[in-house]
Image (tube, rainbow, N blue to C red; front, top):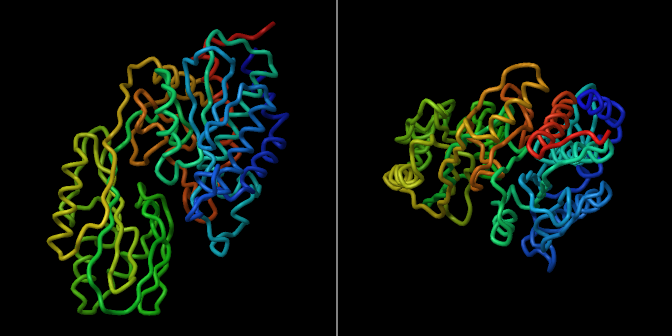
Length: 428
């Protein structure tokens, strides 16, 4: 009975949900402020997006707390410790309107697809989850245990929001985020982000803007090389404009010739740079040269690496450091994360798989990915949505989008997950 009521609720409120998503997408919450104002640690846009979340949480009857303009914490039941935490984020990566078919900072419905920055990462899922909560409230569902939704404002710039929160309030044993993939993403590869440079006297180069996105443009010696943007953890979904330029380079600059050999166009696993590892659970690693530019007499580059769970940060960072230093570069910055894994037999994972089967009508299996989700550093945390592995939603790229069916599934999945994990029943 409750299943039909939840499905009917979505049908009756879809247009309203899309209108609220448009409100949130209309806020440019990408981090651009070099000196954030007092009380706005992640900039004006992030603060406005968090304010929107706070107001909506209060509107639907949650117990809401704004934790120093870094995260909004919202409890189903005030004063009762949650057994479940749901994490999402309201900040986004930047968007260049000239590269988009539709306005990036709107939620534009075209056919059965909604376009806009954040529609898949992570504003669309945030709205879907909050409406799932709203639905349960309005249907009179009673929960034997409480849960907490935590929405942060700095996921795309290093997750300082969640680190700040975790230092002050412990997470419950079960933590879920719609910041990855369905069915259940319980295994995440490790990550290395590295910046390097070398002296350079030659023509100007400008390719890539952020280290975790495959560059779709590179201007070198006045020539524009174009590719296709993709998330840094999924280089096979894009075409790297930087390596495209290097693959055709015929000059004598030793730095460029070295990079062309280390990062061949169309190679995604880093084998030519001394990497190329894989394991049975997480599959092949990825390695992408995502930034290449000239500035102040130096050639500067950035690399995004996602490595299997049987390797360590020390090993992978050590290999790429030695490779680049052997080619005449110096390492300017290097940071990363160890892999993350939650056993498939855990109650959380098994419950989410059963919810997936209920909503989709097909058996769900655990998956592993290279993307770093919001729960990567949270013990026991898994990703449940927001997209399916077979989808290409242009996450972090131009014309980012979510289909209405996927938006609906996020709503249904979280409504049922909350009921199953928190002991829900209809108040009839």
